Length: 170
Image (tube, rainbow, N blue to C red; front, top):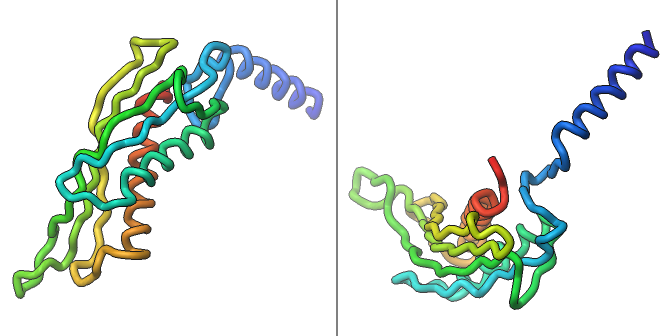
């Protein structure tokens, strides 16, 4: 019985290895033989309301996800993959009200317009707007740690969505 299980495991491993090709646990569909580098140009903050650290922190968050989920190297110019764009939305809106006509809960929404250029496979180029939000109590001020938490959550979602659109073949 043990010999049969070894054979099943061996054949299953071989079949999986040959039928699926190279598998990436991050879902990235990258030909590393031709694609070696990426660049993330600074995202300008063109939103009507400008929070000073948003553009820089977003640019760094996008660089971080690409460094952490691929084997590509970050470069300042002539990247095989190029990410650029601008912050186009940054606004806070009430989403629920109290009986006294005040906001019970607010929502911070950030929208980013992204232009992606794949110099090795131009058919994968795109320009798209991505947005996400963070809800918080209407009685809270969105400053300090509360703002940092909101930006972290929003940037995690935005950068993962951008990564999936540009590099995941789902």
